[in-house]
Image (cartoon, rainbow, N blue to C red):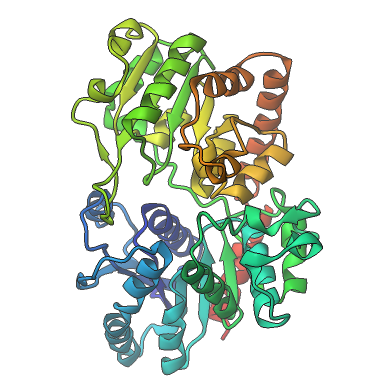
Length: 473
């Protein structure tokens, strides 16, 4: 049966965002043969790990998914991260318009809508031009979606500046979160420049223009947040997660998996900080001291910062020994490994992994839940990913290493987390009665995360509702 409806996916080029949307595309065409998809891919102006992922797509996806690589655009450097992303997406609008026009004149299958990444809101204009609906794919959880809608409402309807709220006005008090929470936890002044904040909340304003929002979560994980979204003015919301790329990477022969095979079950601490995570020499030494003092087995993905002032991805250290304490690698050779890029899914799936020191990015959080691995949140990143950490901590699935990180920065600290603090967090993650209870809880949530995708599960049914909404237009 030939497809009758065509959806155009427009992911942002961040690896976590791109992978989630491609996996969603696979689910859609597997579930219903009335659908075909075109994925328009934008690439950052600098080299990144996305290139190898894109190259692998053509050999691994269904016939009814087509990938179109848009022309690479040149960009002037900016100091603001959000501004860079906004202008990057905006610069591709003409190419997206041309690609959509080609699909529109084809006539069959019927062009049924655009599905846009959460930062690609300017592409809503293209959908309007062609008279087709737009849907948003929200790669994070329902809690942060609610926060964005709430703060945007404060700004545009109550004329408040969310970055300068004081007293009770600074508290986010709605059913989707533990009440009350300070708005600064979500828009920390040290992280968000004024321009960044404006762009961030402009995204939320445009979410309201879409016909619906697909959220990479499941109802059983964030019930309060999901229930709160209609009252915050969200359009139709479909909780379709967890959307993960959980193909069996272990078949690819990663040498590090052979080492894990030799370790006892639940004995290894895995330290990995996402595709954008890196450490300089000072912080790397503190982590190394903590690992050595804890005497736990460890697998550490250590990457170096990008060149100062450049928008580029972190890279592996040519020789990690250069930034580690003298003799560290020799002294820990029997119990630990320091590597560069890590096959995170394959590692988390391995029974030897007993704990995950993570930046608490949403994809990493969902992966840790899926594989039943408790988490320790790294403070430098966890405060920027506060919704994910707050959620898993409330559920009893995570511990904190240090959550007063920003306060120390304001006081003039160098921001380096000390070895004794890291060691304390690792011990809390790995040993004692509380750690055993935490491991039990994460296994229970892991079972739920798998059941929701099965026939009759909550996410399975939400995906079915989205398909019917698209095909019945």
